[in-house]
Length: 290
Length: 240
Image (cartoon, rainbow over all chains, first blue to last red; front, top):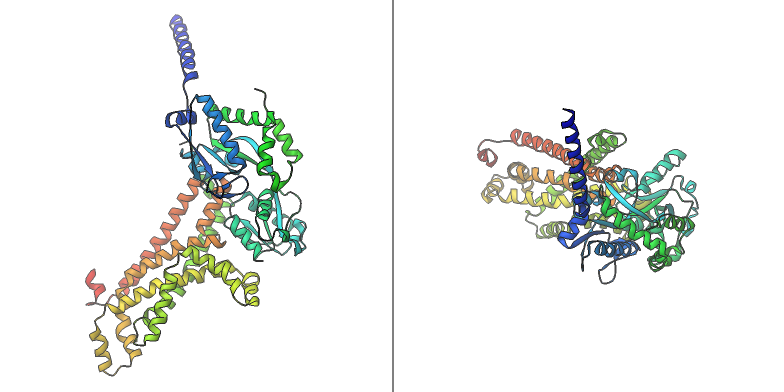
């Protein structure tokens, strides 16, 4: 009996070792999907300047898109493919998770904040940018800090982290803010521009982007302390370690070689100025050795 | 699919409270808009059938204007553009002082849009009655107003009950577009909770069930209206 057991255990061990060996060569998950289909599908946004938007020719461009295209190059090398066709799908806040989970998109390259709640459904690569909530106001508004919003009207987009944060501050500090729950960025901006609201609360970098393309940029300013910590990241499917490794490695190489600075300067510097110390630290911390 | 189902999210606070508040706004927007749609729609529908050419043209233009522009565009125009083109003080009042401006804007917009559709139903209901009845009414000495009040409309409304049921259902579903101007009704709330909880599937299925419950309730209500209003020998009775 004992002999039989030992033989069984040995057999099981052998079987385990051999299947492990075979699996090492076998592709799984997203890498397998890309290899077999010859295409990768990137989730993008149409209006998230300068991260993910459409240029004058209607082509998707931006900081997040550039980083994702670098990852596509790394996948090409990893899978030894000559060419991977890149397809784009427009993604909104509500469709991010369903499109990723049902296999429509493989990489999401917009302005997604990495949150632990989202982490239950989807996974993230390295942090690519850091922002936080600030107040976008008209210069003549006499609003300089969140406390100045007492009794004022404030636009914030429905279902965003911004909404959660500013409403929590409002409740905690008894500011009595009247909220307008705008649908998206253009509506939030329009509400501020037409004086429907006194301030618009969203990610600081988004606010700088909105000012940059305004008809009268000199009339607007971003004020107040950072109300939140919003690390942007590229989204991938959950439980896909092999694919995640390729992505994190590609980004680590950009961080390590300093090439990230060039990409930053191209898209973000004109709007946000030089990278913050915090962002530089985060890049350095994610420049993992090979 | 690697989706992590987590149904408990819909009964977790604050989400449960938000869902119920969203449902309440949906019912409020739709019900208030229906009051406008039914009353204004009736007036315009009747105006399209009267003798006066001027009234017919005005009513017809109204219908074509509001029927032919997508509802989502109308929402935008009422909310963002109207306050900029009216006199300045009125614009400021609309933007700053009107309480629940987004709610009332949505009600007016949806009400007028649906009124055009109701008007067409009313017009076709009146048109479905033979001219003979109208002439007979006039011949007995009734005034034109009395002919409408006692002869045409009682029959016309009975004929169009099924069509009005469809419009009444549409108004509940179309009310979801109010989210584009900031009314956190059921769909807006669903999207909001989807994002915050990262459980979109549960949220949208819940919204589907709630819309279904509301619209089935409306259908049942309209069945009662239809049955109560039934007059033997008229079209409604014959189609049963």
